[in-house]
Image (cartoon, rainbow, N blue to C red):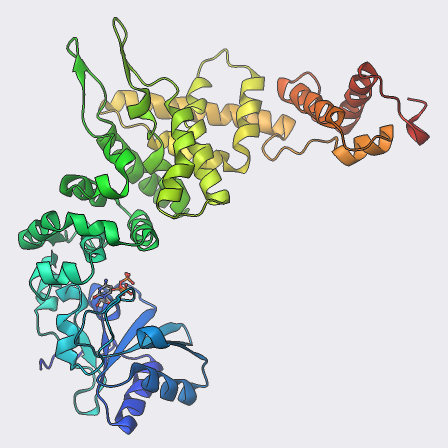
Length: 488
Ligand code: CTP
């Protein structure tokens, strides 16, 4: 056992309580996995994994009693979890078999710490801090996790074929860790032996549940520079399994000596730009805005055309792309609720602001965009700025300036007309009350006429003007007000 004493990392009271309980039970307990790794990386971590040479559930029950916490027991997995102060602490018995929640293999809990460490995914995730009385705080690192952490190396403790075949999700986790742990100071790479093993075992990816894949994608997307993960997935052939439409963006076709933009690397730049712009603005990270960046040009392969004389076009790719969003979300079991609708909306609208750049643009076009984007207009504009990926600095500056002018125009129109969170001043209930009619088609027609007139600037976004138009439209349809409105 190594004897590096890791003072300071185990200051939280929970560790001494676990140590006392394990001592009373006569078992050895350790902190293991991500918490240990993140301590050395100086990253805050609120999830603690405790491994015990014995029953994880029994130790959890003992700790829960000592701290008066509620404990959740997952008998099928042989694990238990409790919250104590700011930490979420999970307990598991040391295993001889591979450790992961979805394992269909029987749980064998009679392993030693070293057995358990050997069956974990990466050396950097297999380090442990002892909570035993005799060497409290010692680092137990039989596979050189600390050396790999310092060198930025992702390596499996066992032969990679075994580690990846135990749980194929680890192939994606390798890419996730290589990407999310990388910083400008320390770049993480996956060892060649592991990459070769991943290439050999790609077929095993199809057995993974979509939820676990989506969780990894989301964690990747939430980091400060996600593109390397997608580039590596594409190179290894993994993207073709998980997100074939994204993989389709790769490549450049040439006809009559004309090539088009390489849409995959463009998308990668847009994604990273969104992350950088969010950071610059002190907002986010907005996972769904990042999904929108990833999918903003997803319709391009299906709309690509070569028009002699003009060159390559992608007409309507925003419509096709928006239509693809629900299918892509469903294929990864991502939510199909308002999050998906938000992504679909941004994909659909991502070209609209550019159309507002010309001087002759009408207020009604600006109003319509404000109406369509609603409260997501700022996110849309951030995506548009991120979509500028030209290599020509003068062009980049000009395009950003154009968008700033659009934003100014929008601010002016918004101040005047308050369209951003537009609510029709005329409601269906009001129309039914004034004309004494039941729910009917006429109501939708009247409401729509009022909305259109406001967006077109024919009437101001005000109650009196809206009511007057309602009465006029209703009269054209042969409707007469009843009650106190009858004299109108
Ligand atoms: N683990 C594993 N194989 C998996 C998943 C997890 O060996 N497929 C082990 C690793 O030792 C890992 C620990 O279980 O460190 C906890 O897993 P998890 O919470 O998913 O990852 P963390 O390493 O804690 O990292 P993060 O919280 O960033 O996901």
